Image (cartoon, rainbow, N blue to C red; front, top):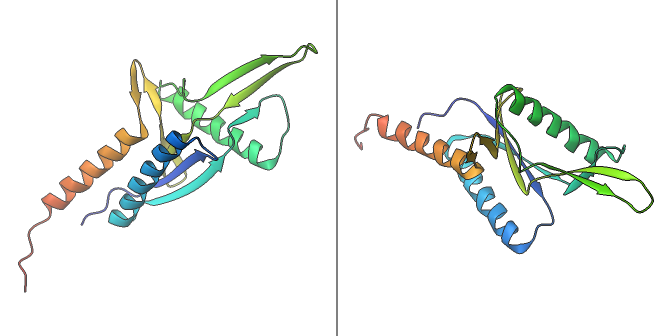
Length: 157
């Protein structure tokens, strides 16, 4: 079987997740594991927080999550797509007069790298079209099927 171009996939997920979201996460985990098995595409798994304050210097995990978001947001800007509504900034106004901003992370996010270069992020929105992680996996699976069917048949010996 011919391998797809070398890509590294990084899947970011929130945990714990509500039951329905967890089932969806598990389905994506299974599909990516199958792709990894079929053609060796490497998948890194990263747990990230539900939300991170934008005005605070929280722990290393929060800083790392914000750094990934900044990379994804820059990619989206460069490619004229949007990460909204998947990533969302929530403004809170407290009775103390304090205002806070928090970045809410999606339950799942898939980053696609060619070497060290970020080449795609899912989910994202292109105009009115939402491009999901499942849509990307469907495309990879279709490419693998095409590559398999294009291989010359080897007679059994």
